[in-house]
Image (cartoon, rainbow, N blue to C red; front, top):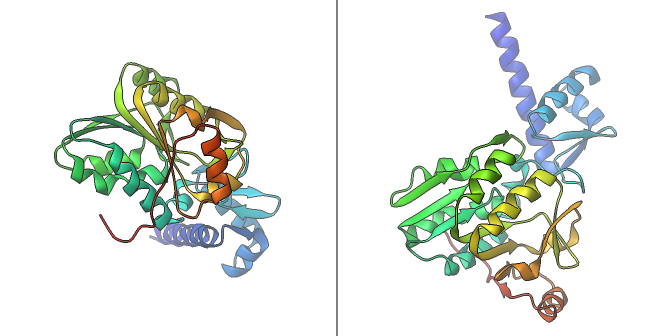
Length: 266
């Protein structure tokens, strides 16, 4: 009983640490030790566990949920960020989905916001590598689900890798809807090479390609290039995207659609 009590206390503390880092984006490790009244050795053990589970990472005395050019932020952090912007993009993407189609959805938290809207386009077939989307679509009526398996990555709650890509290459979908963490010089970038490989497979397997990117993605950086925005049939941005950015991309031949602000629930 004493062991179970200690484990519950440890788990509650680690949950609290994770929530504190998610709320602030980045927190000094010494501040976490003081806040939770634990030793530096204990907070490092807790952070090592959370980092191993893909929830956050440690870097130079800081616990962070923020992305870098090499590491994407955890889905636990991303799924609560800029929800209205993501919903506006998802609502606009619905215009490009028709009943009877097969739709690839990637593991982005922006694409996840499309899921509640899909009830207005049934029947549909949804093809996805996202465990979040798999679990939600599985409860929906009149939507067939093709779940892409492979190697599971906890930080993004999705399947990626050779087995996933092989499965995608045997399919041909009507539409793919995806997002990206960074857009630089009109090109999409990702932190992880395995992410690029799986999204490339989705792009190559779909007849129509839809990209959803909010205004913050144009100020971010990542390491691995996927594709130029011209490879997409439609690039949907939110209303906070700078006019100059939109005009420059249109001048390069990118089909930009500006989503109106989101005003309600699906």
